[in-house]
Length: 68
Image (cartoon, rainbow, N blue to C red; front, side, top):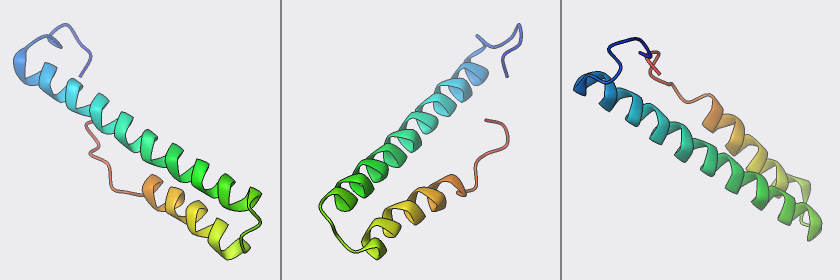
């Protein structure tokens, strides 16, 4: 993907899509991590904290296009 032809329109679009997908996924994982920390600090039951942890794990296991 990052070769001499990376500026060709089709390749450039794929690179832009890959970066956008990675950023949104990272933001969702970060938000769930913050939510889990807030729940823990507020003394909520561990099952509520684990909901966030398992949410992050589920996001990481989403099928990702191998071209990315």
